Length: 159
Length: 133
Image (cartoon, rainbow over all chains, first blue to last red; front, top):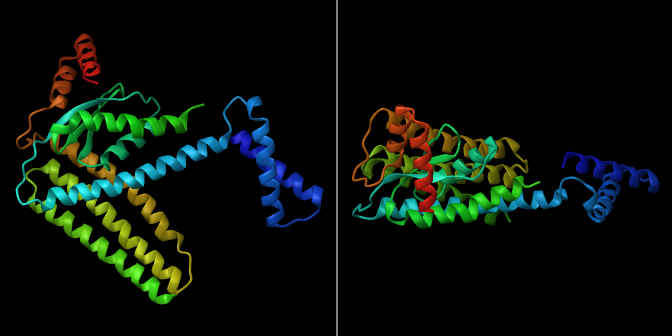
């Protein structure tokens, strides 16, 4: 990824020298054309085209903001209902993610989603222990985490 | 233009205050440490976010200054708030605080296995979880 960005910046400067205009607009133009060249040659790099990864990061960010707002609406609902009738508990969530930063991101995202809060992680970094306000819909919750967050994070770290 | 900006700022401040109110109410009303932790770690985060955004818009529209420190504040808020919630929950659990009306507790099972230090039991535990999914 770093190599591709560096190449792209070099191509931008090349464009500036070829057109002999040395301002920001020329650089941006050159960067854009460099991007096109990189896109055409994307199969020759060992890692995938870096815009895909940036797109995945942006997607993850939007999922995060959406879930944050939903979480807060859920908390407001729980706090403002006159009678509290929930059954809390801690369930185990086996994760497929491996790198440290991925697991950190996932647990932060889980903590900020409706009704769930990460309490601990097993020593071999395979199982997250999640406290849930309402244990009745845990199965849905696990599926939601797997299909939205875990998938989005894997999309970012994919080679 | 400045009127619209003022309205946006006020809306953000009211939203932020509302979320803080909810967080405070939740801390008082909910039954045990863990559920209180939920209210504090979620509602307070969005509350702070709203108020910081209001401050950012104020500086942007009134003093026409792009205040990056406020944005940095938001980023660090999001990095640290879940960690604080996580640590509080864990500390409470290891201190032996009971959950009110809980049915399921996989964590206790895991801690017992860890104490007994048997690899085989742990593998069985993992297998059982795999079936659940």
